[in-house]
Length: 205
Image 1 (cartoon, rainbow, N blue to C red):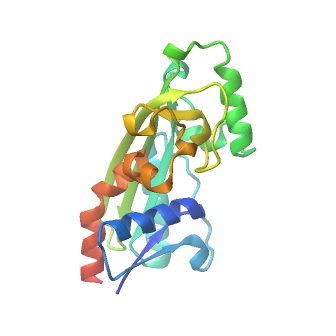
Image 2 (image 1 turned 90 degrees about the horizontal axis):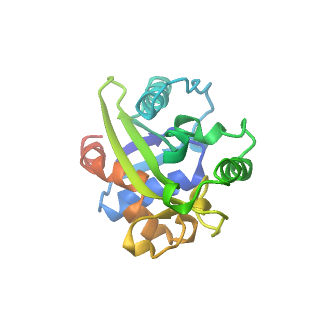
């Protein structure tokens, strides 16, 4: 039985990874989150890119626990804001949480017309084993930032983001089912690219 640690306290990200493993038919792999292990001092995410931050988190988790560790760094890049909030997405309002982040983004785009409200969710997932080997995968999900929050699913900026995908049919990410989001989202895309590596962990460990 293999084990992998998701270096996150986000229960929804943990559930998403477990769904990816299950839907890929991977057996013999236990997926843990930070809540399942003894706490440790998590590293400062001071990278300038999603790639750097994902690797910082995954490498720290692998070094401390001795377990193959997966970390995601993700955020929303808004065209009209020159790619911001980007790596600062979770802290855009100064660490006041999702609601404050959404309100600040709406205020910043208040005078921006629909045709210029293009955006993309970006996710970089880094998988690091205790021997220092790593694999990095990136996913990008294009869409538009709407003018008011809609939907109760998801987290972060999901209530403001309408994907370009026809499957979404004008719904925000927070109005999609978990299965729909997994098949379309930036994180779902990145995790799908790591399925062969996850499958190998289940076989090897």
